[in-house]
Image (tube, rainbow, N blue to C red):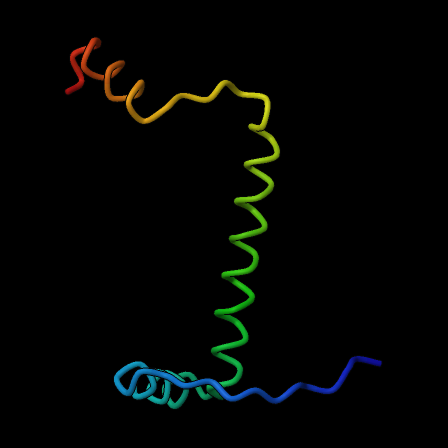
Length: 77
């Protein structure tokens, strides 16, 4: 059995809230459903980013200054 939903108070910018209300009405969904989906998507993106970092942990690093110099040397800047 799944856990019951948890309640939370979220304050939106007035224009953002108006857009959410319109989207909810247009899609016949609740604002809660839209916000839950958006949070899930953001967390999934974070998880993908962390996985990519883990995959690339052994790659050499380069400072920003070195990157700029490399671009300049190779005629990219």
